[in-house]
Length: 123
View 1 (cartoon, rainbow, N blue to C red):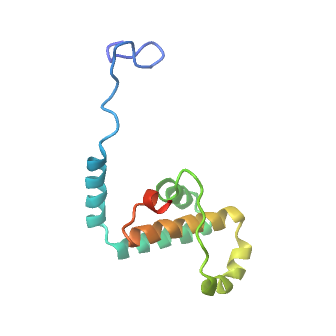
View 2 (cartoon, rainbow, N blue to C red; view 1 turned 90 degrees about the horizontal axis):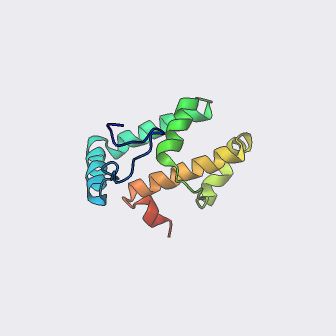
């Protein structure tokens, strides 16, 4: 084939493939630009709305949150004891998957607020 791929669409022999993943510096520049375009207050409003919509059953909001906010491997976040009692009734109505999802979102927001990369916060 003329694009360097074989009959099954795979890269042919001696074809180096595409440009590959951008270097970390480039990724950082894009993330920095995104951070400058959207304030933390705006991001909180957007994510709060997405969480509210996802809890109400909006599949698009749930997918958006999952795609952009959740790590590949599930993580848990310590529960603030003072707030835990006030939210017990709400939590009882949510599935364990919903609770874990909300904990992950909270972790991501905490990392964003402290400007700590999520990967660094895992250790």
